[in-house]
Length: 203
Image 1 (cartoon, rainbow, N blue to C red):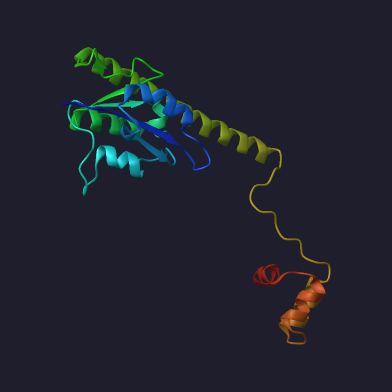
Image 2: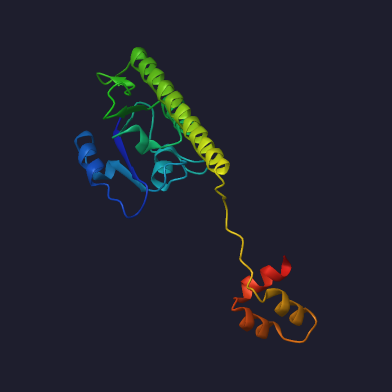
């Protein structure tokens, strides 16, 4: 007998799951069938999610014929390459179905039955979304690089600014180096912290 499970995720413990839970409850028997994570979507190393799909040491909750419902695709994950891999693993290896509430085309189950057209359309939409996400990532990186190059051309320097040496640095440094004063005394005269003093001395 097939079951319907739901998965909800927020990125941090400060965020709440209320909106997702409200949308998911009509699809499941009760809250025990909703698996929740408060973790980043950059990868799939998440306790509740791994309970659903299983690991090398644990059996998956999802079985053939089951349905996994999520509110939106980014709740599954934000790395679209890994999302595609997990999508294929759930639908092809575990032979379960996935339904994305806010994107009806992403639904591998049609009328409660296995449907080749439904799977084809879902896979196609997922490929398009992955392509768009990848192009957007590349575009962001390109814009950042162009911004940095433009700023450098205008003389903007990146990284930590160089530490400005005190006016009496050379005199005090030579007194310390030749042993006429201690490092503590040198720091007092130059009004530098221990870390900054030794960093300048090393330079």
